[in-house]
Image (cartoon, rainbow, N blue to C red):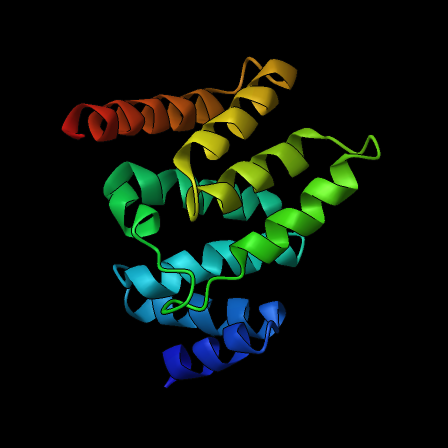
Length: 150
């Protein structure tokens, strides 16, 4: 029931409602990938950046393909719109570690190379962050795998 509610909130772009519902789902079903994937996006939109980044880092360590295989239409993924809005804000000098990490997270749903670029920019600002370094390592490894399979 909570997953259906979370999906309804997510489709309506009510990210606070979606985040609350998906957190309940994940308490009951910690391996629910759909709920986790949408929770990550929702958290980035309600100002819970650290929590979103932690969940994202754990998620891609276990199942990066689930995010990479996101279908923007079928999965009702708002990332393209969210990325455009955040990139527009960054053009006016608002680049911070948080905004760069958020763009890195959101871009992974659409384009791994752009995701890596944003995480690398964040790393320049915060080179001592082991979690950020780990995310970049995972993404680069996956990109090499994709490149080698083509």
